Image 1 (cartoon, rainbow, N blue to C red):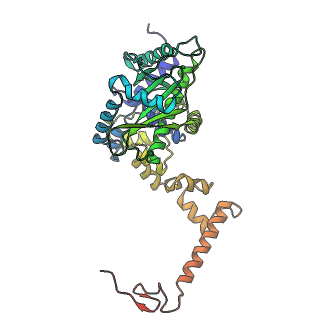
Image 2: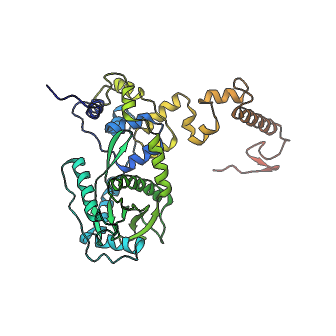
Image 3: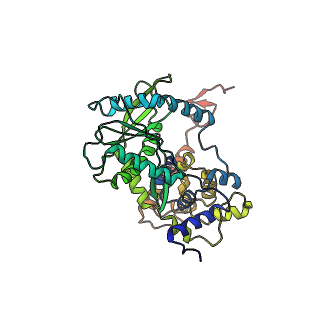
Length: 400
């Protein structure tokens, strides 16, 4: 008799069925997790990421492939820069950590670089937790007194009831036992500053690692401090020399933790799906489309920069006339008006409660627009705008 299936193994079996027979699970990285946390209402992304579905392949099978992702050139350049930063046992990286974040500690002359190899992500996560415990010196409050560099450790974080395995570029254990996340990026830092949008994305990604590290630290006694200032390492100016800056991710960490807590559990979404549903790209297009549409999505224009299925969801949102395709801020202003047709009907006085502030604002805006158009249509002859070739009674030569 086979052993009884537990709730955890049943969920893993269900998620494997959603991927399709023989389809390996795609790992959920911190970048995808940060994007998921930024849109907690999207059940479609939650179940696809939780099941490890390759959304790029899925979008291609649906005929809505996007160019989302990192170019091969940028990927190779980033790998080459990271290898340079970590050369010689991470001597340069530890020097940057010491100078930027912990100048009062002893210089990292001799640092430990533990071997983190193990079988599978679960084994690597367990090996990382053990290395962190040994480097911290559990049982003392002052740490081991040595610097330790963990190169590409594996961390686990519970996301909507399913474990996500995350791999930061590096984690440094300070002599006092504190832990710091290191994020290495290939975009330049010019005169000590970088592109704010790229720095913000790196901060959100690092905040996910900080949350995962806090889970590991909570299992130790005493719990070591996880620093909320991460080290961002980038090329200096237009060279390939590394420079670093401290980035405070407390705000991003709080937002990410709150959004992850709001995510609907993956098992609840899976239980609500029709029996036999599958997201394998090998399925016929109509069957695959029906499977994807069986899970509600929460599309917003920001998805175009964060999700491989954004083009598909945008097309469906436009077909339905949903106001979310205009942006979250517009959606928030319109209250209970969820479609463009509802908005136009309310603005023209054909529907809607006049006491509703959104309806009242729309009707006021429609009246102002009608008044402006009426005024523009009764300009005195010879005034600017009456004829595109005339302005103030003077002839204007057409552009050629």
